[in-house]
Length: 95
Image 1 (spheres, one colour):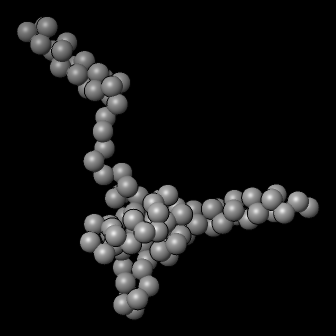
Image 2 (tube, one colour; image 1 turned 120 degrees about the vertical axis):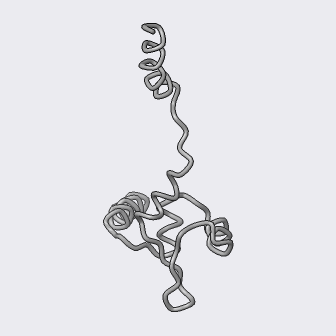
């Protein structure tokens, strides 16, 4: 079997395993979010991203809190804004 094919399959398996975990290590959190390790370290050092340090050394991340943090400051699409505005526009035309 081709080495590249084996490595690709291993990578897919790793991603599947990470997807089923509730608590991620530092490296797993970096891979899961796509945030570089150096930037993730800056975020944890400044307290800008939720994490735990149970033994004072290793960092762990609750996947649910990590997803919530990633999805903060949501921006609505043009379609969502239009859908939200339509009932108000119709209401004002009737009055």
